[in-house]
Image (cartoon, rainbow, N blue to C red):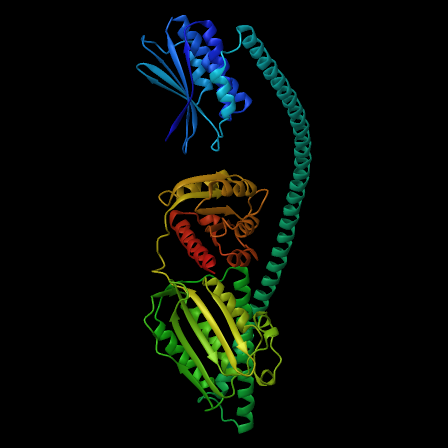
Length: 575
């Protein structure tokens, strides 16, 4: 970087200090510095000059301009006598200048100037030729600078006062707005609490109504099953080889009675099982399932049902699958219902049954496809409704109650899976059953870092806390459902156990809110309930949670419930 010499001065007495100050301000002006920076340069030179004169140090001052990427005004002060750079004047210079570079024989004061600096050559020539103003003139100039500075300070003070008034007015508006929002929020919270209370009351009414309906179904089913079994048994005795001889018409009538009684018994059994499924009392008994045996059993049961030789049952070879641990009876009932529907509505072509891995890493799919009449798009959701049958020509001659697919889907949900279909009218239907796989019935749940327990009963919370020992590193507790939600949002637990009857907000309400929160939707949840949960079991399983009876809390039962909740949460999250 190049430098240009601008001016040279010798400082020996107080008069020279006045001249140094004056020339410093003028050279700063020639170098393009604004008024404030001109005063800073002049003040720094004046204070250091007085320090040097006080110590009787003869000093030479050289003004230079440094050009290049970092342009600056340089004032080099040099002396022969050793100087200690300490004192108020030196402190002032350090504050006002960009940098002070000390050497053994002097100091260089640095002040950064604008990049595109253009020197005022005429002003520099006048400065070199001028002998300088008198001390009185310099004092007048300093007084003028002081007056200008005071005026600037006064203007800035007035501006600060104005801004402070505006800020106070804004603060008053913010406080008023905050108070208004707080009042509105409090009213909203009161409305939400009232709404939750109303929802809980409606839920209780619905549970009572569902429980009454289920009790009615169960009682009627039990009352009907005994006489129907008697009718079936008697007709079989009449038609058996040891019975009395009958004419062809008599045997035909007995066969009709037997067939009608068997159909009625199937309807009663479906009604009873549907009632159990809705009440949550239909519990799966999981065990390792031999799929080859199940498929052979289904093949033997379905082939006699085929209408004619124009329909073929194709069972694909079983691939290598992970061991399936589920309720075999429920699995067979689901697949038998699906296959029997395919047989009823397929006049020609084939019914194909396959089992395969996926779609998730811990899932298996059972697929039944047929070349039957198909289902119109507007009817495909309704086929899973209870007692609903799609109007069709084949439906007239097909026996059924309309409970098959509804019952099959309930069983699939109880097993932790799903049942869905896709269909094209005139082409056929595909029904897919997806079930989770597991190692065995006593598979251990995954340990968690933080578990949240919410129950109004302190003793119940203590039992749950003890049962979670060794499973959860940290257990936090809440006395009501609303506090549980606040803790869940704050702590982000890995597991939530909440009482179905938690104060302020029920367990099902807490579960619903958690499932709507994107950050907490995948958290495993266990609902702790008492006897006769009614429709609660259906909503809990539908929202991907597990249930635990409060009278059977133990490390083993809690571990199984947590395991079920974790498996269900993973499946729900993957979908």
